[in-house]
Amino acid sequence: MIQRLRRKFIATNMLLVSLVLLAVFSIQTFSAYQHAREQVYEAQLTALRWISSQAPAPFEFGSPRHEDGREPKRDFPSVPIFAVEIDDAGQLLRIQAGPNSTVDRETAQDLVDAALAQGGSQGNVAGQDLSFLFQESGGSRFFAFADNRLVAVTLRNQLLTSLLICVLALTGFYLISRFLAKLSLCPVERAWEQQRQFVADASHELKTPITVILANTGILLAHPEDPVREQAKWITYIQDEAARMRSLVNDLLFLAKSDAARLPPPASSVPLSALVTGALLPFESVTFEAGVTLTEQIAPDITVQGDEAQLQRLVVILLDNAVKYAGENGSVSLTLDRLQDRPRLTVHNTGPAIPPEHLPHLFERFYRSDSSRGRAQGGYGLGLAIAKSIVDGHGGQVSVASSPQLGTTFTVLFPKK
Image 1 (cartoon, rainbow, N blue to C red):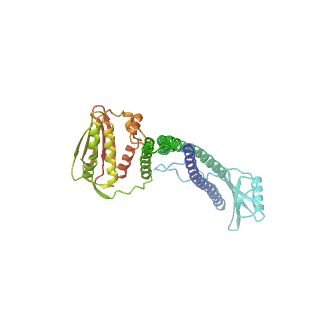
Image 2 (cartoon, one colour):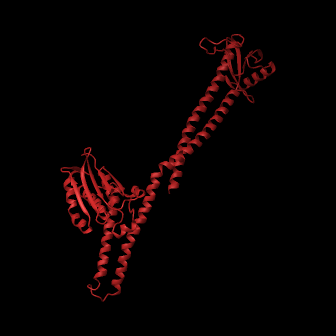
């Protein structure tokens, strides 16, 4: 799917660029064509002025430049032209050729006859790359002929130049589009891969309790005559696995709602100091049974904008994670204070350090730095992902640092109230 999306992205970019280049070069080619036609027409008018005034075509070789370096204005065109005067019968009376053209009387008469046969005040001579312009002035009749090859050459050069530029531009845009497509679709590709991994992990986690439930249900059905008291062990196993499945499904639903931005916006003021103090109480017995020392340092009167239930769940997740991995005779400390007027929650635990290569992935779903230990302690690898989702929903940041000397520290920084 990603490859198809990348190809579609490139094709769309190339189509848009091609349309823009086509429009630009079409306008430019048409403009060059019109300019060449105007040059030919202006050359014909110049030739008519020369012959009607009976003035020779002016030409000055090596004319000096102006003092500012500009070329002097020349009174002759660069298009090969000549003009003729004819009588009422269409016979040639006089020829005046431009500086860069020569024509004999016989050829000029043939061209005049062709122009007269075609009719009209202007047009192209059939079978010749020449255009003509007819004018009557003071009882005299004049024809001006100009070489049309300038128009064809200009048009051909413009088309070739445009084609070359288009090829180079499209090649460059194609390479740029490939790079941009790869760069732009990296987050999509990563999200797609994470989604596939998420589905695979969720299926794997659900597979184990379902297998246990089916196995225990089979045992119960194999002994239908036994009383419930004798089958209590299998029923308990089924209940425990069903509870685990419910917990997993609830966690998945929470993350799904968070992804869909359907979580209620944090709008109420929550006394974070009191909330953290209340969340610590149930962990006194938990840490005592685990042989872990629990200490806290909570600054008073700290409040945040948010959802109280979600914030309580955040504290419980961080504390539960710290107690699990504090190690035998380890310690857990919780600190709530302010950092530059921003509420800061810090949960620290001793125990084995998390390897550096695992730190960037701790908040990914179903990720465990030690998968066997996580399953043995009943975890699914969703707790820290839920914690990050809660922090993100409240506009905060969560980070983790771990080292063998200092232990592991999770830090949550909330926005200013």
